[in-house]
Length: 419
Image 1 (spheres, helix red, strand yellow):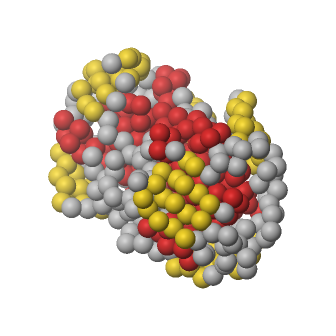
Image 2: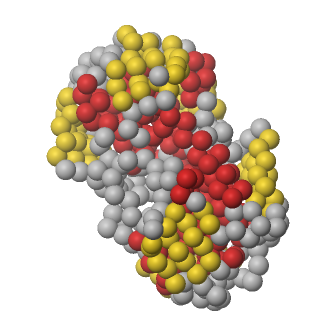
């Protein structure tokens, strides 16, 4: 395993290009299973999760070629319907091959997924939706087994205990494109990544309306074709670099951002005293003094849970008391103990974290537990004056493309070493 060594305490300045959204790329890659025609995806980030999805598609009979940020997916003769544990166990998004496999090949055997340790994330909504479409589904031996001679559209309520599910919405939307008749997905996820997936499915010939709202309507069709598509930029990466700018006391210009996808984040940044300037897809973020703030995470368009850990670092530098309430993954607080090792004053009470401001983080050796917690520790390390060592940083390379190089370009002193 690798570790990151950061010599912090220096302001970051300069420009950084926001990469393509991995949470958009992964389900769009899975959508290629709905056709035997060529599929070309542009603006694809080079991430371990993307490589894992490419391996899963290869195991399912696709040929996947990377050229720069372009991903070409072609069909081979294989009609495999098994997504094996050795691949699916590393990331949760791989479970979204289930819907396309079932719709196109009428059967699927997909390992139950892994991913970051951020609390319970069941697949019950995926299974509920597919069963509503007429599939026979069972869990056995750590795998989800599903089969259906024909899927039939119907109205499905897809709400869960903590709101909508992005991956379940993606899975059911993809499956219903080849179902007979009309499917209505109520309480569907509204995230930009779902809208991006719907755009791709429409290019393939699907009939979809309502994407971006809590009610998506899909009229089934007999077959789908190939597509060419440029995916949206990563709003979570953009928000993370905005935090890097503020915790370092610097100024970062984000190139290629999607401001419309970041309104809740910009609102929070403005309230804590950040300076934000927006010009088309260029966003400049700067500021030194941080005001306390209460934040509650919600599904989109609310404040994103994927930025909760990073903003906890930022609010630790505010003068006063802040409270973060986690409404999406109530157990997503693995980073609290490690931030406290670096001098933070954070107390957790169930789904709430109470944060008492400090002047600066202290350098320390810490352990990353998941993708966004890793980014939070990087943010704390950039603020701390001295040497911070972050162990188990392989999580970072699942979600942040060329993070070390981007930070070095901004003036950070950072290096990666083998443990």
